[in-house]
Image (spheres, helix red, strand yellow):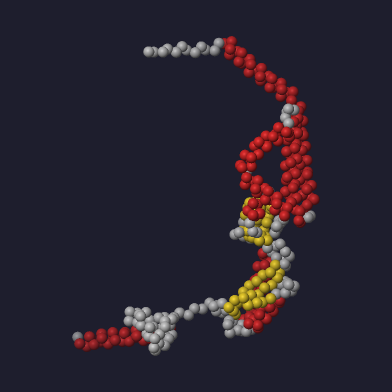
Length: 351
Protein backbone atom coordinates (compact mmCIF):
# COMPACT_ATOMS: atom_id res chain seq x y z
CA UNK A 1 0.00 0.00 0.00
CA UNK A 2 1.36 3.39 -0.98
CA UNK A 3 0.83 6.33 1.38
CA UNK A 4 0.96 9.73 -0.14
CA UNK A 5 1.98 12.66 2.12
CA UNK A 6 0.47 15.99 1.39
CA UNK A 7 2.95 18.85 1.02
CA UNK A 8 3.18 21.19 4.03
CA UNK A 9 1.49 24.49 3.44
CA UNK A 10 3.88 27.32 2.76
CA UNK A 11 3.76 30.29 5.17
CA UNK A 12 1.43 32.94 4.05
CA UNK A 13 2.71 36.48 3.39
CA UNK A 14 0.63 37.71 6.31
CA UNK A 15 2.44 35.43 8.83
CA UNK A 16 5.88 36.42 7.53
CA UNK A 17 4.99 40.07 7.83
CA UNK A 18 3.85 39.59 11.43
CA UNK A 19 7.13 37.87 12.38
CA UNK A 20 9.19 40.65 10.84
CA UNK A 21 7.08 43.25 12.62
CA UNK A 22 7.49 41.44 15.96
CA UNK A 23 11.30 41.23 15.57
CA UNK A 24 11.49 44.89 14.67
CA UNK A 25 9.41 45.85 17.71
CA UNK A 26 11.71 43.86 19.98
CA UNK A 27 14.74 45.57 18.46
CA UNK A 28 13.17 48.97 19.02
CA UNK A 29 12.36 48.05 22.62
CA UNK A 30 15.96 46.94 23.22
CA UNK A 31 17.27 50.12 21.68
CA UNK A 32 14.88 52.24 23.72
CA UNK A 33 15.87 50.43 26.93
CA UNK A 34 19.53 50.96 26.13
CA UNK A 35 18.94 54.67 25.55
CA UNK A 36 16.99 54.89 28.80
CA UNK A 37 19.77 53.10 30.72
CA UNK A 38 22.63 54.95 29.03
CA UNK A 39 23.06 57.42 31.91
CA UNK A 40 23.12 54.50 34.36
CA UNK A 41 25.73 52.69 32.22
CA UNK A 42 27.91 55.80 32.04
CA UNK A 43 27.56 56.30 35.79
CA UNK A 44 28.46 52.63 36.42
CA UNK A 45 31.60 52.94 34.27
CA UNK A 46 32.64 56.10 36.12
CA UNK A 47 32.07 54.39 39.49
CA UNK A 48 34.11 51.35 38.45
CA UNK A 49 36.98 53.56 37.22
CA UNK A 50 36.95 55.44 40.54
CA UNK A 51 37.10 52.17 42.49
CA UNK A 52 39.86 50.88 40.19
CA UNK A 53 42.14 53.86 40.87
CA UNK A 54 41.18 53.78 44.53
CA UNK A 55 42.30 50.15 44.69
CA UNK A 56 45.65 51.04 43.11
CA UNK A 57 46.12 53.86 45.60
CA UNK A 58 45.41 51.54 48.54
CA UNK A 59 47.90 48.99 47.18
CA UNK A 60 50.64 51.62 46.79
CA UNK A 61 49.92 53.02 50.26
CA UNK A 62 50.23 49.59 51.91
CA UNK A 63 53.51 48.93 50.11
CA UNK A 64 54.93 52.29 51.19
CA UNK A 65 53.98 51.65 54.80
CA UNK A 66 55.81 48.31 54.83
CA UNK A 67 58.70 49.19 52.52
CA UNK A 68 61.09 50.20 55.29
CA UNK A 69 60.11 47.34 57.60
CA UNK A 70 62.04 44.24 56.65
CA UNK A 71 59.82 41.87 58.59
CA UNK A 72 56.61 43.16 56.97
CA UNK A 73 57.83 43.85 53.44
CA UNK A 74 56.64 40.59 51.89
CA UNK A 75 53.37 40.63 53.80
CA UNK A 76 52.73 44.20 52.67
CA UNK A 77 53.02 43.15 49.03
CA UNK A 78 50.40 40.43 49.41
CA UNK A 79 48.08 42.53 51.55
CA UNK A 80 48.28 45.28 48.94
CA UNK A 81 47.24 42.87 46.21
CA UNK A 82 44.40 41.47 48.31
CA UNK A 83 43.14 44.94 49.17
CA UNK A 84 43.27 45.94 45.50
CA UNK A 85 41.27 42.88 44.45
CA UNK A 86 38.64 43.36 47.15
CA UNK A 87 38.14 47.06 46.33
CA UNK A 88 37.83 46.31 42.59
CA UNK A 89 35.30 43.54 43.33
CA UNK A 90 33.21 45.91 45.46
CA UNK A 91 33.31 48.50 42.68
CA UNK A 92 32.12 45.91 40.15
CA UNK A 93 29.17 44.96 42.42
CA UNK A 94 28.14 48.60 42.84
CA UNK A 95 28.40 49.20 39.08
CA UNK A 96 26.16 46.19 38.41
CA UNK A 97 23.52 47.43 40.86
CA UNK A 98 23.52 50.80 39.08
CA UNK A 99 23.03 49.25 35.66
CA UNK A 100 20.64 46.50 36.82
CA UNK A 101 18.59 47.81 39.75
CA UNK A 102 17.06 44.37 40.36
CA UNK A 103 20.50 42.87 40.92
CA UNK A 104 21.20 42.01 44.56
CA UNK A 105 24.49 41.06 46.09
CA UNK A 106 22.73 38.45 48.18
CA UNK A 107 21.73 36.56 45.04
CA UNK A 108 25.34 36.50 43.86
CA UNK A 109 26.54 35.30 47.27
CA UNK A 110 23.94 32.55 47.20
CA UNK A 111 25.12 31.54 43.73
CA UNK A 112 28.71 31.45 44.95
CA UNK A 113 27.65 29.32 47.89
CA UNK A 114 26.00 26.76 45.64
CA UNK A 115 28.93 26.57 43.25
CA UNK A 116 31.59 26.88 45.96
CA UNK A 117 32.09 23.15 46.33
CA UNK A 118 32.64 22.64 42.61
CA UNK A 119 34.99 25.62 42.45
CA UNK A 120 36.89 24.29 45.46
CA UNK A 121 37.50 20.92 43.82
CA UNK A 122 38.39 22.48 40.48
CA UNK A 123 40.90 24.95 41.96
CA UNK A 124 42.08 22.91 44.92
CA UNK A 125 45.79 23.21 44.10
CA UNK A 126 45.53 26.94 43.43
CA UNK A 127 43.70 27.57 46.70
CA UNK A 128 46.17 25.38 48.59
CA UNK A 129 49.13 27.34 47.20
CA UNK A 130 47.33 30.61 47.95
CA UNK A 131 46.72 29.72 51.60
CA UNK A 132 50.28 28.40 51.94
CA UNK A 133 51.61 31.68 50.54
CA UNK A 134 49.60 33.67 53.09
CA UNK A 135 50.88 31.47 55.94
CA UNK A 136 54.49 31.81 54.71
CA UNK A 137 54.14 35.59 54.70
CA UNK A 138 52.58 35.59 58.16
CA UNK A 139 55.04 33.18 59.81
CA UNK A 140 58.05 34.42 57.77
CA UNK A 141 60.32 31.34 57.84
CA UNK A 142 62.33 33.17 55.16
CA UNK A 143 62.17 36.55 53.46
CA UNK A 144 63.07 38.19 50.17
CA UNK A 145 66.87 38.19 49.58
CA UNK A 146 67.36 35.25 51.95
CA UNK A 147 69.43 32.36 50.61
CA UNK A 148 67.66 29.03 51.02
CA UNK A 149 68.11 25.36 50.16
CA UNK A 150 65.01 23.40 49.13
CA UNK A 151 65.53 19.79 48.03
CA UNK A 152 67.98 20.01 45.09
CA UNK A 153 67.57 23.77 44.63
CA UNK A 154 69.65 26.50 46.25
CA UNK A 155 69.58 30.21 45.63
CA UNK A 156 68.36 33.67 46.65
CA UNK A 157 64.65 34.37 47.20
CA UNK A 158 63.52 36.90 44.59
CA UNK A 159 59.79 37.13 45.22
CA UNK A 160 57.09 35.57 47.40
CA UNK A 161 53.74 35.57 45.62
CA UNK A 162 50.41 34.12 46.65
CA UNK A 163 50.84 31.14 44.32
CA UNK A 164 54.57 30.44 44.22
CA UNK A 165 57.98 31.60 45.40
CA UNK A 166 60.77 32.34 42.92
CA UNK A 167 64.44 31.87 43.72
CA UNK A 168 67.49 32.78 41.68
CA UNK A 169 70.18 30.10 41.65
CA UNK A 170 73.86 30.93 41.92
CA UNK A 171 74.41 30.04 38.26
CA UNK A 172 71.80 32.54 37.05
CA UNK A 173 68.65 30.42 36.71
CA UNK A 174 65.16 31.09 38.07
CA UNK A 175 63.27 28.38 39.95
CA UNK A 176 59.51 28.70 40.61
CA UNK A 177 58.43 26.61 43.61
CA UNK A 178 54.74 26.23 44.61
CA UNK A 179 54.09 27.62 48.08
CA UNK A 180 52.42 24.42 49.23
CA UNK A 181 55.68 22.54 48.62
CA UNK A 182 57.69 25.07 50.62
CA UNK A 183 55.21 25.12 53.50
CA UNK A 184 54.96 21.34 53.90
CA UNK A 185 58.65 20.42 53.39
CA UNK A 186 61.94 21.23 55.09
CA UNK A 187 63.74 24.39 53.96
CA UNK A 188 67.29 25.35 54.98
CA UNK A 189 67.76 29.12 55.39
CA UNK A 190 71.49 29.89 55.16
CA UNK A 191 71.07 33.59 55.96
CA UNK A 192 68.68 33.26 58.91
CA UNK A 193 71.35 34.47 61.37
CA UNK A 194 74.13 37.03 61.21
CA UNK A 195 77.01 34.55 61.60
CA UNK A 196 77.66 31.27 59.83
CA UNK A 197 80.10 28.47 60.63
CA UNK A 198 82.22 26.81 57.96
CA UNK A 199 84.20 23.60 58.43
CA UNK A 200 86.68 21.48 56.52
CA UNK A 201 88.55 18.22 57.24
CA UNK A 202 92.35 18.34 56.89
CA UNK A 203 94.22 15.04 56.62
CA UNK A 204 97.69 14.60 58.15
CA UNK A 205 99.98 11.59 58.25
CA UNK A 206 99.91 9.02 61.05
CA UNK A 207 103.51 9.84 61.90
CA UNK A 208 102.84 13.56 62.46
CA UNK A 209 102.22 15.27 65.79
CA UNK A 210 98.47 15.82 66.14
CA UNK A 211 98.71 18.62 68.71
CA UNK A 212 101.23 20.50 66.57
CA UNK A 213 98.98 20.11 63.50
CA UNK A 214 95.99 21.43 65.48
CA UNK A 215 97.97 24.46 66.62
CA UNK A 216 99.16 25.22 63.09
CA UNK A 217 95.63 24.92 61.68
CA UNK A 218 94.27 27.31 64.30
CA UNK A 219 97.06 29.79 63.64
CA UNK A 220 96.34 29.75 59.91
CA UNK A 221 92.62 30.28 60.51
CA UNK A 222 93.15 33.15 62.96
CA UNK A 223 95.58 34.86 60.59
CA UNK A 224 92.99 34.89 57.80
CA UNK A 225 91.47 38.35 57.57
CA UNK A 226 87.72 38.47 58.20
CA UNK A 227 87.40 35.29 60.29
CA UNK A 228 85.53 36.06 63.51
CA UNK A 229 87.35 35.74 66.81
CA UNK A 230 84.06 35.35 68.70
CA UNK A 231 82.95 32.59 68.47
CA UNK A 232 86.58 31.40 68.28
CA UNK A 233 87.74 28.83 65.69
CA UNK A 234 88.58 25.31 66.81
CA UNK A 235 90.21 22.12 65.49
CA UNK A 236 89.20 18.59 66.52
CA UNK A 237 90.11 15.07 65.40
CA UNK A 238 87.09 13.51 63.72
CA UNK A 239 88.37 10.37 62.00
CA UNK A 240 91.22 7.89 61.77
CA UNK A 241 90.96 7.17 58.07
CA UNK A 242 92.76 4.58 55.96
CA UNK A 243 95.82 6.72 55.31
CA UNK A 244 95.23 10.01 57.20
CA UNK A 245 94.27 11.40 60.57
CA UNK A 246 91.43 13.84 59.80
CA UNK A 247 91.35 17.09 61.78
CA UNK A 248 88.26 19.24 61.32
CA UNK A 249 88.83 22.98 61.33
CA UNK A 250 85.79 25.16 62.11
CA UNK A 251 85.49 28.93 61.89
CA UNK A 252 82.74 31.60 61.80
CA UNK A 253 82.15 34.36 59.23
CA UNK A 254 79.93 37.40 58.84
CA UNK A 255 77.99 37.99 56.57
CA UNK A 256 76.82 34.42 55.93
CA UNK A 257 76.06 34.71 52.22
CA UNK A 258 77.23 32.17 49.64
CA UNK A 259 79.82 34.37 47.93
CA UNK A 260 81.41 35.28 51.26
CA UNK A 261 81.48 31.64 52.39
CA UNK A 262 83.30 30.57 49.22
CA UNK A 263 85.78 33.43 49.51
CA UNK A 264 86.64 32.63 53.15
CA UNK A 265 86.87 28.91 52.37
CA UNK A 266 89.39 29.59 49.61
CA UNK A 267 91.56 31.82 51.80
CA UNK A 268 91.48 29.56 54.86
CA UNK A 269 92.30 26.38 52.92
CA UNK A 270 95.21 28.06 51.14
CA UNK A 271 96.57 29.41 54.44
CA UNK A 272 96.27 26.04 56.24
CA UNK A 273 97.93 24.12 53.41
CA UNK A 274 100.88 26.51 53.25
CA UNK A 275 101.22 26.53 57.04
CA UNK A 276 101.27 22.72 57.35
CA UNK A 277 103.68 22.06 54.49
CA UNK A 278 106.10 24.80 55.60
CA UNK A 279 106.26 23.19 59.06
CA UNK A 280 106.90 19.68 57.79
CA UNK A 281 103.40 18.27 58.39
CA UNK A 282 102.61 15.60 55.82
CA UNK A 283 99.33 15.79 53.89
CA UNK A 284 99.26 12.33 52.33
CA UNK A 285 97.25 11.32 49.28
CA UNK A 286 95.53 7.95 48.76
CA UNK A 287 97.92 5.04 48.16
CA UNK A 288 97.30 1.37 47.39
CA UNK A 289 99.45 -1.72 47.88
CA UNK A 290 98.99 -4.47 45.30
CA UNK A 291 99.91 -8.05 46.34
CA UNK A 292 100.44 -10.81 43.77
CA UNK A 293 99.51 -14.44 44.44
CA UNK A 294 100.72 -17.63 42.76
CA UNK A 295 97.45 -18.95 41.35
CA UNK A 296 98.69 -21.21 38.55
CA UNK A 297 97.49 -24.75 38.14
CA UNK A 298 100.70 -25.98 39.73
CA UNK A 299 100.31 -24.00 42.97
CA UNK A 300 96.53 -23.76 43.17
CA UNK A 301 95.41 -25.48 46.36
CA UNK A 302 98.92 -25.82 47.79
CA UNK A 303 98.90 -23.54 50.84
CA UNK A 304 102.65 -24.02 51.38
CA UNK A 305 103.42 -22.47 48.00
CA UNK A 306 100.85 -19.67 48.06
CA UNK A 307 101.69 -16.28 49.46
CA UNK A 308 100.08 -13.15 50.92
CA UNK A 309 96.56 -13.54 52.21
CA UNK A 310 96.53 -17.36 52.54
CA UNK A 311 97.17 -19.41 55.65
CA UNK A 312 100.21 -21.63 55.38
CA UNK A 313 100.91 -25.01 56.82
CA UNK A 314 104.53 -25.60 57.60
CA UNK A 315 107.06 -23.36 55.95
CA UNK A 316 105.46 -20.48 54.06
CA UNK A 317 107.51 -18.92 51.22
CA UNK A 318 108.73 -15.39 51.72
CA UNK A 319 106.92 -12.47 50.14
CA UNK A 320 108.13 -11.27 46.78
CA UNK A 321 108.34 -7.62 45.88
CA UNK A 322 107.11 -6.22 42.58
CA UNK A 323 110.62 -5.04 41.71
CA UNK A 324 112.05 -8.51 42.30
CA UNK A 325 109.33 -10.13 40.22
CA UNK A 326 109.96 -7.73 37.35
CA UNK A 327 113.70 -8.35 37.56
CA UNK A 328 113.20 -12.11 37.37
CA UNK A 329 110.80 -11.64 34.44
CA UNK A 330 113.38 -9.60 32.52
CA UNK A 331 116.09 -12.13 33.35
CA UNK A 332 113.95 -15.03 32.12
CA UNK A 333 113.16 -13.18 28.89
CA UNK A 334 116.87 -12.45 28.35
CA UNK A 335 117.74 -16.10 28.89
CA UNK A 336 115.03 -17.18 26.45
CA UNK A 337 116.36 -14.81 23.80
CA UNK A 338 119.94 -16.06 24.37
CA UNK A 339 118.83 -19.66 24.02
CA UNK A 340 116.93 -18.84 20.83
CA UNK A 341 120.02 -17.09 19.46
CA UNK A 342 122.28 -20.06 20.27
CA UNK A 343 119.84 -22.45 18.61
CA UNK A 344 119.86 -20.34 15.45
CA UNK A 345 123.66 -20.23 15.36
CA UNK A 346 123.87 -24.01 15.81
CA UNK A 347 121.47 -24.56 12.95
CA UNK A 348 123.54 -22.30 10.72
CA UNK A 349 126.77 -24.19 11.53
CA UNK A 350 125.12 -27.54 10.80
CA UNK A 351 123.99 -26.29 7.45
